[in-house]
Image 1 (tube, rainbow, N blue to C red):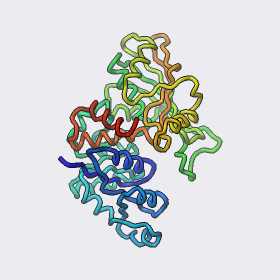
Image 2: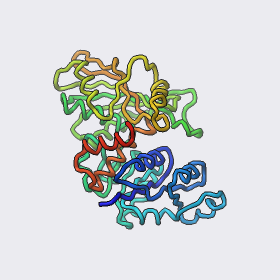
Image 3: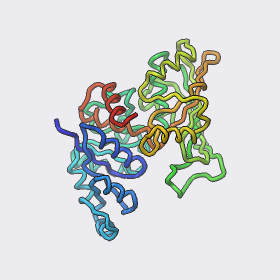
Image 4: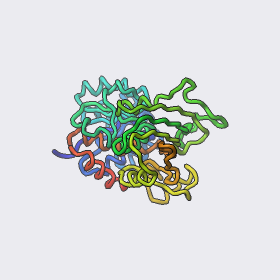
Length: 335
């Protein structure tokens, strides 16, 4: 088959990164992206050669702003084989009937509930289950990062119980409207947090409990991980296991903070300075009384991007082997 035609509905933090990643793939092409306002992101999209589609009735505002448009969002959807819905959480649910009526496949992000698609995706854990599906949800940045680690450990040693403390960024760096300024916010106050059940939407057999707090930072999330393993192992063996995983990156103790992790991404020449892999402090990996402890940093703006690409490839039956899709996505994205 020819290149799969991909529409990106929503061109914000996630949407613009998905668009750039899809544009790098040799088996996919961008039909267009959608914007609701003629802001700087719309102009950037035009400059990159993406066709911009807008809600019906909003055409004049874009024309007045001098932003050329290709048509309405409905026209974009009608021209696509698959839509990656990157609209704000809760909005994607309203779009499902539009995709169904148009007869196109759709992928939602972690801001939507699992029940919307009926299937939640992670590239390593359940790629084959996504093969040929009509609808899927790529889980959130935190759940993606947790699933990558938990899947690897479960495959190698088995997991009795996972306990996770998430230290969450307050908002994204480009968002000036929200976030605690001088506070630590329990998120939520009623425990446990939703992240454990979200992992279970992919791996229902894992016993996991999670708690979370919001901090006054915008750079990354931090996870403090404690896992009881079924089989005995050493910290050195866990390090070796992680070194062999395609989307885990071990970092040294000379990287002192999430600020330096993000600086490392820039120094490595990553697009936007993103860090799409889990960033695990190698020296934090330790075994105490048969339990594993470690710290990892998760870049909330970018770790789900390669998962979206793999999900497209699985749903459109472009590649049956998940490992081959992961390798291709990583290679073409320069990861």
